[in-house]
Length: 146
Image (cartoon, rainbow, N blue to C red; front, side, top):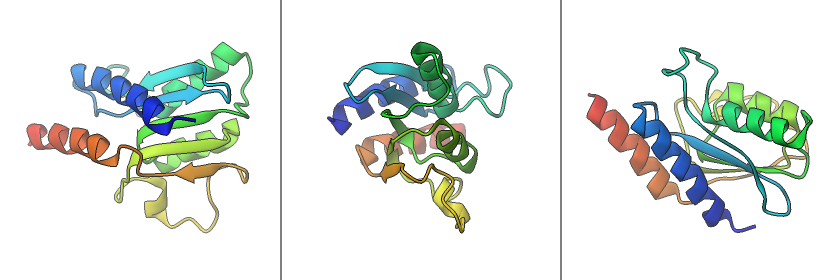
């Protein structure tokens, strides 16, 4: 798969969040054949729902598109390392692969030092795709908030 191509789609979603004054994180779910089946961006403020993260929105959309809760054979592209909540949801959905842009040393799943990975045992993780672009979007957002 062309990781940068799909990460750019996730960045498009992050910009939609930014336009709503949401934390600019975006995600897309892509099948093994390259079909985008789910898109999402943070909507926690808009929906007043702490679980309305980009990954959750994209997973829900993909499950609805594919007609089932398991997303085997799919890849999730997300602009920032998933939090522990999203990582667990990714695990339950059995997504094959997670590709993220920027690390999140404060709230990303790896910050918690879990003895057991929250992802499905067969899920592979790739970080750092378009990392600078993803990180800059977040840095600028929070800089403008202060």
